Length: 252
Length: 253
Ligand SMILES: Nc1ncnc2c1ncn2[C@@H]1O[C@H](COP(=O)(O)OP(=O)(O)O)[C@@H](O)[C@H]1O
Ligand SMILES: [Mg+2]
View 1 (cartoon, each protein chain N blue to C red):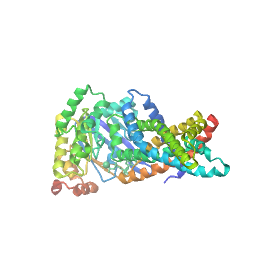
View 2 (cartoon, rainbow over the protein chains, first blue to last red):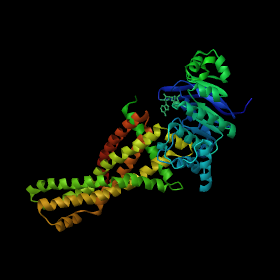
View 3 (cartoon, helix red, strand yellow):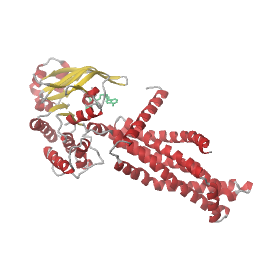
View 4 (cartoon, each protein chain N blue to C red):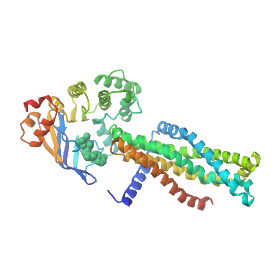
């Protein structure tokens, strides 16, 4: 049994009178790639944001690395965010800054090292995402797929142990989808990170996933391997998998 | 939908929180002087032309009106006195605040609003920084410093415009107008106006930023929030102007 490094326990969350989660439970194991699927607006992004303290649950608790997220003080939260990085859906690059300044942002905040060391780290991570030499460009000059990759470079700059991907391939063309999936896999292998990937794309689910979790009716309604998912009788899960545009639909 | 008074009080509460948090960040090392200077350049220096234009013409039109209005009392020659008092105590600070508020405050909302809906504000936090320190504090500080300075420019240009028209309409010399104004204007008049503009600057910064960080609902939401900011800021300036004037009359006389 793999070591559990993150666990959501009995999470409830509402915005105003809109209840998002009622009793959500989920464990994440060290080194795995867990994908989270679910319909639009079920709270997949909210789930990731709860984990790094961008949102607070109304009830329940989230433990990461043996400590409750809500119990962390300012420094503890800073430490948590250096260990868990997030790639936002639209990459969320800072428009007013160059690629280089974007990637240096977390390095500066976490006191990475000398300016020379930071420069070297920028070169390193840009190579990791296959985009060397674009330090001086502004986000507006990049395509959607390139933005995602720069966003990823920014997220991995401080060497996180866990990376959260919020719909990393949504809205990209097939070539970029494959490229991003490849990057998620290679980061996994090269850096040994734990990945949590929110996605709609069944291709992504079946090419990179160790385990799959489905959010349905305000909770995690299914967790298991993709193979287990295929043999499940759960109607909503089958429909979701069939509805996806994956090439593996045929053998379901 | 919540009742209006509840929304109002929660807004006041949120702005109070932003103010306190910004103040705390202002005194934390390292001092973010680059961000503040950058915001002063963007919001303050770029607003001087609109300020000059508005103040100049307001001073001129006031002189036209008073030159005629004071005629029946045989007091047209004192037009310069009246106009300079009106400009320095009231119209300089308020007009500048309304114009700069509309321009800069709505800009703050649009900028922070689009950062919010594109998750850039979340990104700042996830990367280990604090949006209040990086976004709100520099803008509020910049406006609080820049608006009084812009108001000084407005006062000078307004009085100059008013003086010019007094000379032309009433037929007095430049020297006479100038001496009249210097004789009339006291340090308290200046203090009165500038104290107000410090507060207006703070209001513009805090309302603009607060409403930006409130923004939801994509680019459409940004548009709605931006328009709303102009209304909120204008109302806040006009209402607080009355209250502040009452208070400062008590303090400065
Ligand atoms: N900060 C917020 N304030 C209010 N409502 C929010 C906020 N964040 C998300 N929501 C709402 O919560 C629901 C779930 O959002 P989200 O997690 O983004 O869905 P998705 O599963 O598509 O990622 C949506 O209806 C959204 O409008
Ligand atoms: Mg989402």
